[in-house]
Length: 420
Image 1 (cartoon, one colour):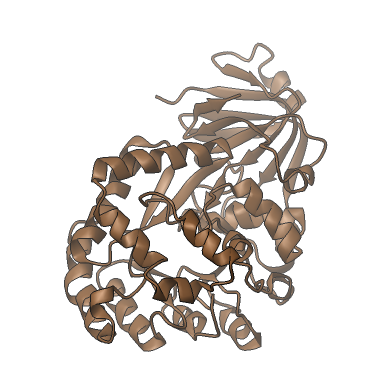
Image 2: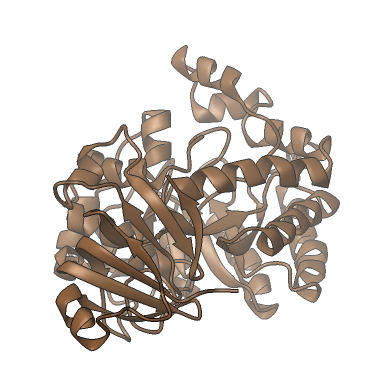
């Protein structure tokens, strides 16, 4: 049961917003609402009011009926919204990390039976209960770093039984975790070994068998396809997205991580909620995205870990596009869900300003999960997913101090879930 919480002695309330603002694009990404010497009132799990502390004390000098939290001069931010993860997996893949150090490419590792196919076999051999247990450890970790909402994809099953297994695990996590969790069906993550040379037959299996049973069980909010060189073609991607849309799943796409794949254009054509990765984004792709409702989502953790080219974030923002940042938390190419680190990478690798990067990790991340009416900013009526920092000297300190955890207290759904 959510309680009434009053947070006082906030040095700065960050990410305040107005009702109806669902994303920030272009120059507006630099706009970050703030209030100094602030209060925040939470009631029934929602943001009730906020403003200068003096205003609240004048209204209710006794601060009646509230659990009062003294922020101790820390700042309050909306919780991070991580719109792209693969955090349900079995075990780790650090030996492939050594292969990368020794010069093997992502595609070369995959051809040797590593990568996604490695995780697929491990998942097959692991029970649902064990998968839940492992994932809960990861969820608790990302909560401690300030994440309040997360999207989790299937895609390590690669057959109907194991894809359903993953989605059942995600459903169990939704039931037990305070995080807001969205589920994405990603059967088209890779081509199983037994379908090598018969890729269209695997696409048929996704369309004719997997999608109908997943839809019948209301097991996924979104459908995703890895549309890139060596994975699924634009034509195959279109077939899968059309089937998903027919069965009520909104599209999201892995696109242009390895080459100019045409995936961005396919995503726009089918009104994808987001197109993700985007290392290979040129003028044609930017023009295709402008004026659409599709959120370009960048995954700096994967680019960093794989030592890939960087997506042209600065060019995209300057052209007027919105940007979301997400962790891509997975065992092979981005084994971290720390959104504070992703925030820092957005500034360091992509030359985003701190304000732009914060908006990319909050309101725009929420949009990329179809949650920006509920989460992503300090707005009256939104769900109270916020975190309080230890005392820090400035907003800029959040991405600047990339090696330390600045989060002291986490409140999700109006409940205190972490203090320290």
